[in-house]
Image 1: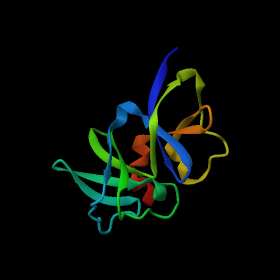
Image 2: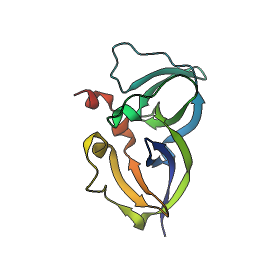
Image 3: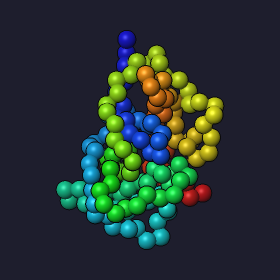
Image 4: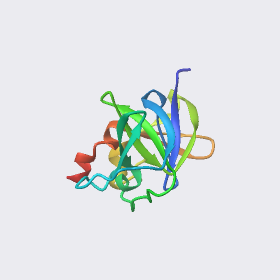
Length: 145
């Protein structure tokens, strides 16, 4: 049976995942530079081995208050358009290996700004995993419209 792997994490008690092939790395960071005049979804910039990485606060993208940027923040660095961008998450999970036949369309009950960022779902043993569209998550220009 064909299967896919997803890096899983939580944002505001939602169980989310992105395809493992889109993830460059997961790390903790404490130093962010604010981006004046940037949309609220932009959590700041940080230096990753000499490369400046922009961050997207998924809490704000989901219509929630922004996270505190003090202390360690979990970054899931994804590649989109060949460029690294960090998704700020609440908790990191494991890599889930899921059967393709278990993939379902997003639930009809999913509404609001989150709906556009979800491409589908998987019912796992204990939770519903919502699969994110990485490109849509980092598209802060669309969020500002």
